[in-house]
Length: 580
Image 1 (tube, rainbow, N blue to C red):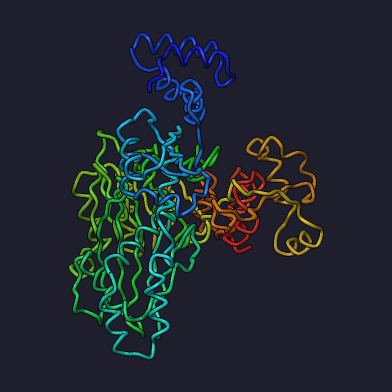
Image 2: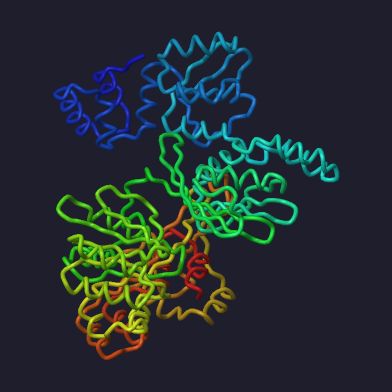
């Protein structure tokens, strides 16, 4: 079944999917380039895949189905195996008597229709769907961890008293399948970390999703040795070493995605605890805007990284997204004209055309020694994973003085606090003033789930309680200054009672969490001439921050309130991460 460009044009002219003038121009271009009109419209984003496929279905006279949010009964879904469904992009989603309704990307594929008819003995009713629908439906083949191993676990728990039987069950457990499924489900749930923790009587698996740990499942204690051994084999670690910590790394490929796992194994009282950091090597397209940097803060960062020399610092606690911000910036700066070198501990992501060096303190490859060696490698841009000591600080300052752009991180709570921290590390105030371009402080907040987002206003009691911790007068003034960055529907900003906030009530899309995904809140301190003078006078952090605010800097709390009022995150999240 195929739709001609002329057919599509005729039907689209009678619809309201696309402006007819734009359609005419696109049709002419498609004819000249000898390509299908629908493909060109998708490329130019003049029509969505959903609407294009609806139109195809209408023209061909076959049903269209959207399965993105449809829960398919397990018995119906598994009429055909996952491998067949995946290979042929087909999903069985409904059974009417002796008819099977099958969602397909190509309803004209007679071969697969005949195959399904012979295999199932049902009459096949092909329905057109979208690629996204197929992908979402394929995820339903992935049963929950509890269902995957439920019989084994239940048997284990109920037979604790029978030691011989327990040992036999433990030896017969499909360890490879358990580990593979733990990894698979972590990727499906977009987990950043997997924690496998032995207890006195059981093993607990937890996932960190959007910065918060969640219980994934509980396994019998007898499988712990097998899980540890399997992960050590994958990571090429010593199997017989149980007394000291071990670090490793391995990669797997799932659905054409290359996923790296950074492994840390440490001995604990009940055995060995494993933490795996999940890193998607194939994830591309991250931009500073997607991370949450917009408008003036974004312009300040872009100005700083366009400088040929100087220091660009990102600050914040562990897990606040500092490394992701630096990698995103490196991706922007990574062109054939420059030589980029990094010294990291550990190397989180491998980047093409970037010379990345791993710190190895045992053999003398410290941040300081590595940085000193990198300066002899003719670099234009240097990224130091973290400035941890005085020596590294001095070399970084000197590198910035001698014509290099240095990117690095510091563990401080605010942007202004980075200055006194550097002075504490024996950096000269005049050197800091002349080399540091910009300091960014950041935190990660969870995004409100768009599917179940609900608006609300603060009650008087809540405002009174929060007023003890937050100066609302300052917040309101800042919101008024930033009104151009706020949603058009914001309305008046005269009091806290006027403001609308948002929260997720919980739905299937967010696993009833009310949140889905994360973004950053930032404060960007640009080292201007007036701030340089303050640094040279050894001013304290609060004085530097006050001056930066006068010059237009938004502190993280203000940036957070802007994003909360815009419905991107919740007020609770802002207060949680800023500790207000």
